[in-house]
Length: 415
Image (tube, rainbow, N blue to C red; front, top):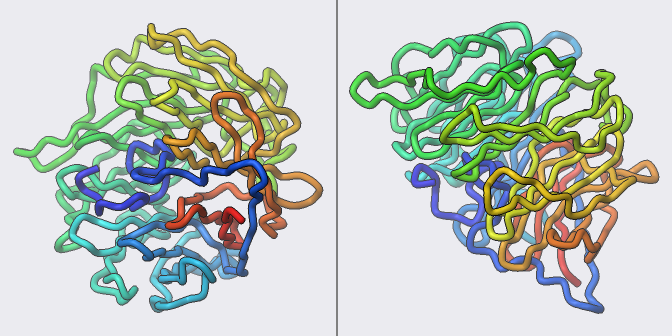
């Protein structure tokens, strides 16, 4: 995490390992008699919030209607009031291109970086643009990671065109060498630990190590896992790196329009996949719900303190948890909730063990706080979103969190 600003949440999923775990935050600490409240505002398409210094909250949004006309879309960054969500500073429309939710992060140098469409941008903390870069492929680039050496790494999104990893110098916002061509396409966002990048392709997972003398990423020929094999599964999504194992889920092809429920296109059940980070031959796959047509668009969550992994089948409305035993291989079923319409990225408060997820029901979205060890529901509130969110929450600064669900941003707080 040394490439990022020291903050409880400097980037999507809390950082490049995608642990979705709040750093340095004690949690909501919901007590008996307390309930959840909600403040909301309409947005264009909100993707995520990130935190800077105490009280600083930044929001990333993007346009969409132009994409239906075949025109380039744009992004926008706002600094918002942490309580009311009102705009305090706003960037101009940032050049983008083909539409896909992008990414934003605070670098250790103190500036904001955005990758959206086929552009990368650097902004100051008042959301004023400092530099921009057009990326090489005319496809959407789905966010980025910051390596410990401070370099940014991003890639294009496609299920047909092989992925290209582009490395960017944070100070100059210029490319570092030529793009590195992967052997297969990739839908999922990349993850990283230290200076090693993990990529989920449409049939296998692989990793690239930073070669400092050559100033490029090198494919690790000794670590690769063909998770599709001879199965009928579809591609995987974002991968979570806990330092020992990497976790992700498959059957990622779906028909999401405004909800994931019923959107699966494959006839098989989606799976939770584990692969050892030290030996890719050590891997396993478990069905999440076991129901046909299972699908997701996001990663599982791993609680390193309690050794609990949480997966979901968004298409069939199933949320499930397992405990990872001491051998780092055996997964013991812990609890299951169904019907439960989780589809978004999650948020874990490690001290309190509170897991924040969404539940799409009765034609709308609700934000729910669960005890991760038992699955017991601690609180629930209607967020106001009519779509089932599939993007990124973040913690807040005062027993609260922020929930993005496309056309709505909500602040969920204890009252």
